[in-house]
Image (tube, rainbow, N blue to C red):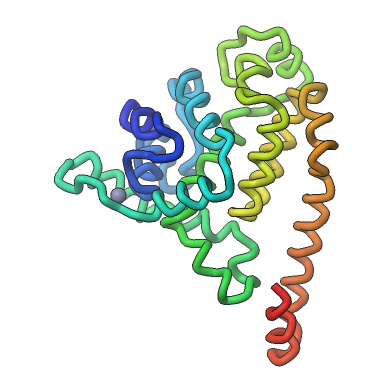
Length: 245
Ligand SMILES: [Zn+2]
């Protein structure tokens, strides 16, 4: 796990490629019997490692410009890892074996115009999607009792307090989540937002309104329906519509 945390210590320039980080994430968090079936399940020791969860979370929600996000995805897609290191080789092998489910989550990959598809490759985005899924699972079942406990602060599991979920402020968090969805249209981002909102209602609601978060969900849903509908149309009509993107 120290390998992963060390590599992510400089958020915009991880020291290793996405496949390497993906494999390291799987191998350091899941016991062997569940690695292949459910790579984002976690062990109890991982569950209690607050530094681990905070590092993953801050890696995602660190404020970035669009150019910086594009640079980060490009960095993840380029492997310059030291393959002579046996651990690093093992991370790449595990990543290659288990990362494909992430890209299959993207509805847009099936229906998007051909020009957009090169943006959605496992090399660029598998690690980010897996981190979102890990965080979603990591927040667990935030029922009424656990939300009250988190609000008081000092619980043993992450998030230990609402402050863990808004490390750069509510506005930056909402901006960051909406930005990720523009780059990687996976609904896990909205699912995680809903869990964060459950814990941080009063902190987050003004920012969700300010940045018209609900409109963004409605727009992305409309886009999803439009793209799926267009796939049923004759090719000549579809081609004309793609020119509008
Ligand atoms: Zn690599």
